[in-house]
Amino acid sequence: MQITSDVRFAIRDSQAKNGLVTIFIPGPGAALTVFEPLDEVKEELKVSLEALAEGEKKGKDKRKEEVDIAPRVLASLVGRSVAIPFKDAKLVMAPYEEIFLIDFEKEAARREFFVQVIGEDAAPQGQPPPKGAPPKKK
Image (cartoon, rainbow, N blue to C red; front, top):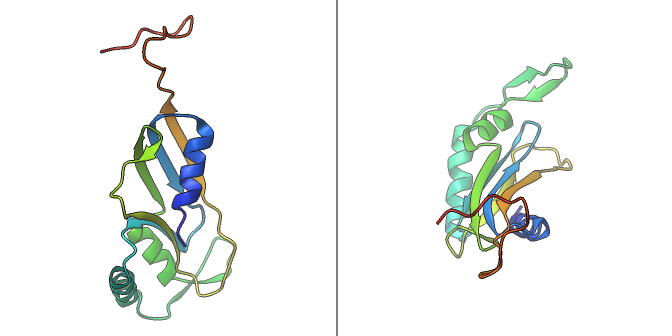
């Protein structure tokens, strides 16, 4: 699932102009990644990940419930967070790249992800900084 628009909205809503946005997905079995969504790239990624997740191994979670192991391994390999800088309120990525949430679980479930924006508001040129603000470095 492509989530780039959601991340852009979070940056816009923060009113930060320059900084870093971190996206995190809690819970096992899903991951976040950035790639150019060409059909060939999607298919090769799918084939490669399926090759890594062969088998139907099961395990028990902390609640002693049976869980599939492969989705947890894949999520660990791909990663459950992504950090991307932004400049002038725009993500610093190649023009055709997108941020994707990949759910490796077989059963459909609602997935939430968290977006944290850390940044600064670029003051307009020629205006003094607000009272009490440290002077800008050049």
